[in-house]
Amino acid sequence: MSETIFGLVSTYGLWVVAFSAFFSCLAVPIPTALVMLAAGAFAAAGDLVLWQVWLVAWLAALAGDNAGYQIGRRGGVPLVRWLGAKLRKEKLIAKGEDTVARYGGIGVFFSTWLVAPLGPWVNLISGAMGLPRLRFALWDTAGETIWVTGYVALGFAFGTQIDTVAQMVTDWAGLVAALAVAAGFGVALVVKLWKHVQPVKG
Image (cartoon, rainbow, N blue to C red):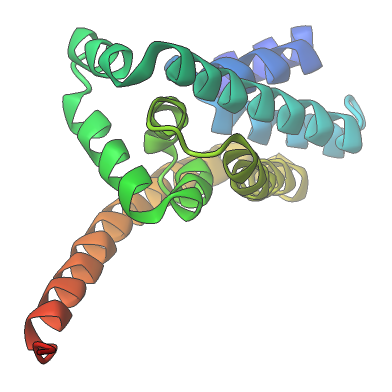
C-alpha cells in the first residue's frame, strides 16, 4: 500500500494530496493519512514544498468537510440515514447523531482527528441536524488543523522511516478509536449516575 501511495504522490504531487483529503472527508475510503505522510516525506527530501503540502491538504480537507455539511443540510436526516443504510454504515450514523446531539461543535472537533472514521458522517449529520454553520466551521477548522499538521509533520520528520511510521500510525489510530469509544461510554455512565444521585428539588 505505502509503495503505491509513494508512487502516486511522486507522480502527481499536490494533486493527489488535494484529491485524497477532499474525498476522504466525504466518506470515500482513501488512505489520506498515508498520502499526507508520503507528501511530508517528499517535502523533507526537497521534492515538494512543505508549506504547500500543508496548505493544500488543509484547504482540501476543509472544503470536503464543508461540502459534506452542505449535502447534509440540503438532504436532511432522511438522506443521511438512506446513505447509511445503502453503505451499511448504520452504526456510524447512529454514533454520529449521538455525537452531534450531545456535544455539538466539540463533537465535530474531535471527529476530525481523534475519531477520524466518524468525521465524514458527523459532517453530514451536522448539516442535517441544523448545527449552526459558523459553529461547525470554527470547530472543524480547529480539528483539521491538528489532523493535517500531525500527519504532514510526521512524514516530514521521519521520511526515511516512512513504512515504520505508517504502521505505527495505523496501530495508534485503532488504539485511539478504541479508547475514544471507551471514554465516551465512561462519560455517559458518569452523567447518568450523577443525575440519579442529585437530590430532587421540591
